View 1 (cartoon, one colour):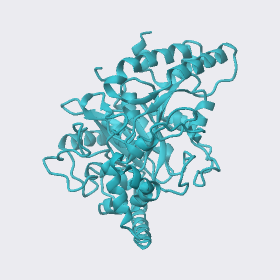
View 2 (cartoon, one colour):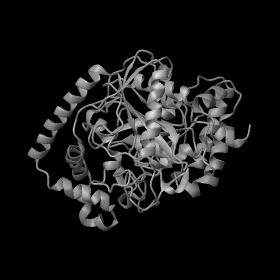
View 3 (tube, one colour):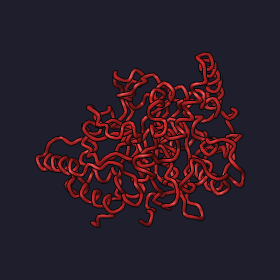
View 4 (cartoon, helix red, strand yellow):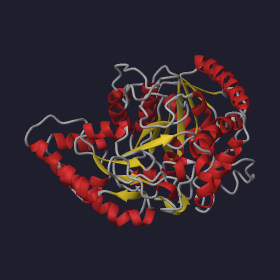
Length: 470
């Protein structure tokens, strides 16, 4: 088998081939590390690569196979972690000059679980400072570039993870999502990214164990691979006070089965967003595919006004509490986008914040009633194709200047506010060859339904075979 084929092989197939001794863990990891050496300088997906440790781990993994020892579900399968996620003994900078040389003393829960499942850690993927925006660049490592067009953004804040997957630099990646940071880069890079329900995957260590915004989630090139990774990472842990109890669901198998009979809403703009015509056309065609799968599809909007101001008010407090103490010493070295968010938050009072939670509750009640009628909601993932590197926002959408910095992410942050599971799956490419993602949003805690719908669409309209020319 050619090394390039190994590098683009789905994780499910890699794991099965290793268990059946058709592939060796050393062979797989060596091929991917070689490709990283060749391709990563072009895309800048990885900011830290631990090749020596990965090869040592994969030799142990191979020994376990040959000795017939019990193997975990990810045994010998390479994985990357975002540079916001602590990894014991592996530099974790959070994309910030403040932590440029930081090496955590312990693994995050997700890293512990991946290691226990037998995964091989390749390194850390690039992120904007503290994951503050939808474009991946920072003062330490620079820009991550889109593998489909190196002059375009890879999205963010999990842009390094998405670019690595698209470029064949590993079959699995971990990301995190506060406003769309898994779904946005997944759309930009033509891969799969799941924002699971709040609490589905434990977050530890975390300064704020009670936040109801940020989640960790799986990223991959196929829905089946994302489901496999979710099955490994999900489950309760008392170190995260919001982690959900075990449900008995087999998320690895959740990507199987039909969606016949499901009630599906398609909203091209949520009633308020400006959308690029090509993005709308491709996503609308994808939505029609669900009718052919036996679902009932109709155009419908949830009925809420644009919640951008609400999102900014609530999330600004997180930035102030976590990072304002660094301003006095580090302000000139911090991302101006992050500084602006902190300053916005400093002007909010406790009463302002509490009133914002009332508005968030009202938003939830509107969405809850909508999902009494529908099992799923389909939207574009982002409002425009990946735009040129050098800006935090596209120059315009459909010829209209943006009226806010989050306008191009108008479809993702509402469902961060509601905490529902949402996935981005590739649904086509523009005339310029740029990926477009379809967002599938499910009912509260219905992660398995979202995965099943995404997998059904992927089977009906496969995209994973398409590769960027690098």
